[in-house]
Image 1 (cartoon, rainbow, N blue to C red):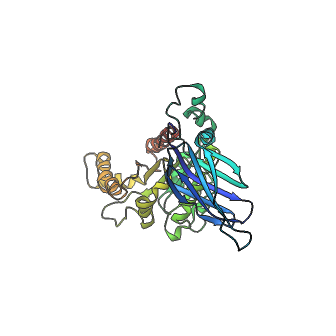
Image 2 (cartoon, rainbow, N blue to C red; image 1 turned 180 degrees about the vertical axis):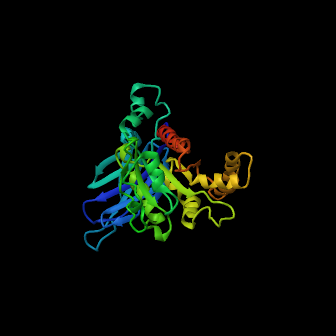
Image 3 (spheres, helix red, strand yellow; image 1 turned 45 degrees about the vertical axis):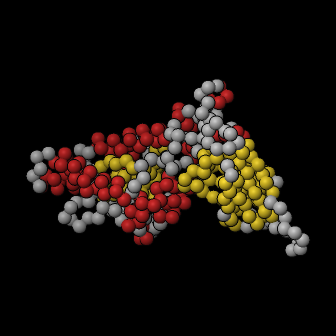
Length: 344
């Protein structure tokens, strides 16, 4: 048995010809089918990491008969040693070609032998947090939020990204792959995920597809490191809705795709809430606003997003709220750094 489970985020197989009928992954007495994506392409993403505790992982490949006569061909069994896979942990990807079949296995950073600290060779299996930070010059953040919540203004104020102008955020013009580079804080590169509603131009499936694609990137700098879910701070009595339907669905059902990627719920336009508390003649408007946020915003989200590891920050783009914007940036930096060393 291996000393530590191998945790796999995805498996991809590509053949050189369309002779493959089916592929199954076999491990620890279990077997599961790898879905076909095209004629010669099979792959599977694992929102819940596939965990291998044995010393090998195998693939059972059934090929079509060249002639439609005679007995059915026996499956080919391709066996891969787990230690060979672990040796590729620093790149978080194992690649090999067996029997004219290109096999790629996506690795979770948590796939580290328990005795990784006991010797020089074992230590080499896992990159340290410092090494990952050195490789990852910029942190990559996906910013998701409905039009009108104040994303573009927040990005301008927090990072000085001048190209994050109003026209960049018009509904129907979504380009989730477009990189917004922070000029005054070059540790960050942003992607605009828009909202999850149909009019926003990016569906929930598009966001999940972007996340999965980024998880498969070979270099850490090209992967996704954090998600900001921007929500306009709702004011009681103003008819404001806490979350749109698509956002609720994502938090209830789809955050598992993120695995250990930090997700921060960003309550924007916090100044509106402070003004409302002041108009109610609260003795300490800021304390009252924080209590309101916890009771009417954070608690309801926690109740229906059970199991999701969420962080919360309230911000405003108005003058006098620079400290809250800095808190968001620092929290993002802190949690991304922690995720590099996280076992999950």
